[in-house]
Image (cartoon, rainbow, N blue to C red; front, side):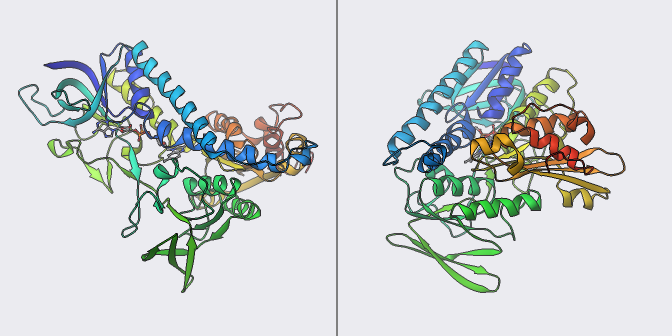
Length: 473
Ligand code: FAD
């Protein structure tokens, strides 16, 4: 039997389930259709499991030099099945939490694959959702006034570099590794590639990163890339930049061998496994786009600032529309879409205010323009930089690599961007985010008295350094 809803959301990832909660808060009768597990990529294949593994790797790396802290340990080793067990437990706990939130919000969850139908006996407009139920029950028919497509993304690979899940993997398969490989080639030195490089290296693997651009994490400020490269090399990661991997040279046997064109010559790389981390592809297939006027550009669904597609009652949010493919972006887009549906007149998202994080060890985080971007946009730029080496808390932690860099406008004194690399900077970037939202000046940040001793003192000092007034630098 067909059921009517104010809103049906296709996909229960971070974008979809957060949108559902906001819709329920606003009194919309809401259903969510999820073919896998509520929580989506972030909870099951992304943010959370990868950070759980990173944390274990970090504890192992710290334990190996615990004597630096005067703590004597012997025979530090890894029980990798326990590492995986811990990761799975965290994911399960959070998954139950999301299921509970759906019940609490009286959101109907349909476990199955949803597909948008064209105009039908149910509705003259495209948007009726047919759900092929996972349990084999007859298809459910949902008739919504509005639809949000939040079907997310999946790993991309290079043509010819087929994923077998054993020797050649994406992050999806790597998350389920049963043991740490002795060596691994990571194709792609972006955020995900570098997080894996850091983690596997800390676990003891011999890691080689092959990156096409002339620097790793190439969307970050150049100085962050340079410092990240230095710190990855310091922990033993080999990094080859300006390298075009040649998929046709892949050979598999006991391990893998592959060649890359590096600055005009061909180099061969061998390892036990190969991880492909070259970006993500939107899940737009099989969801009935062809039954609608929805437009797709470069593989992503096109949507306006309120996330309406060409069909104004069908919205699209999260990874499936491209842009910043981040969990907090997907959920915020979901909230804006739902508030627009409910007539709440939400403000469009200013993506230049979104913080981006890399959870390697050490971490990196940024918000706003890089120095080069600011110059390209015609700003008269001034910068302030402060090293964690002069921050007491960083020395106490035994983690004094890295710095905070602030990019500001000489004429208006506005902070244009903040870039950090070092201990716990992913937890510190929100101060910079708030400074950007409030259009703060370096002076205002510096005069937000930072408690001592904390890592956040580096932000205050970098703000002073913008006008050459750092106290400890
Ligand atoms: P998804 O989370 O992909 O959810 C889409 C959901 O839709 C899935 O559950 C899927 O099963 C379902 N679906 C698809 N098609 C259908 C259909 N036809 N019917 C029903 N259901 C369907 N982001 C961060 O912000 N921080 C991080 O630390 C971070 N780490 C990451 C690490 C890794 C290894 C990866 C791969 C990603 C990471 N991300 C991180 C990115 C983040 O996971 C995504 O940006 C986020 O999950 C996007 O949310 P979404 O709701 O758009 O899509």
